[in-house]
Image 1 (tube, rainbow, N blue to C red):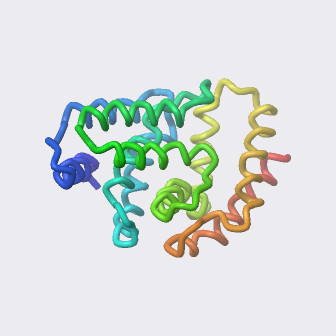
Image 2: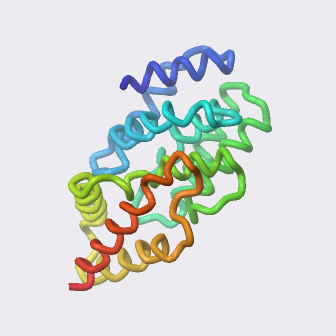
Length: 203
């Protein structure tokens, strides 16, 4: 899957120029050396699911923009990555000359990745796409967990294990991890993956 093709199509649908420089700057962020999971491959995976779910979205262009920008700022030593990513989007959205409504809707989706809670239908699809890794096959999920550990390599092992367990338990304690019918088939596998990882972290 070619990310620039998706970007270009999105820009065309928004009646914007292709903004190749803006796209290149975006990709540079996802190619930072400190990233192991939150990379361009994560974007590719997200857009694979996006194309499957696109027909169910009220405003697929907003979802596409949110996917492109949701992890544009990712510094594991910061606590405000979502806000900073949203600000980066607002800057570029203004440069593109988009409406305040579009800018605000994309901003809302990006900020929703902070706690993964929403009542908006398109945002629910967006969040399900972002969390789809939880319901992947064992080897894919396990690589995801190794990549997350690599991104937090500076955190002492015991502290990382305790904090990671807390994060994963929050998802496991939800009535439903995934909001939409498109991802209901991921639910059972996600719960198995999460529980298996929690047990490993407790050893």
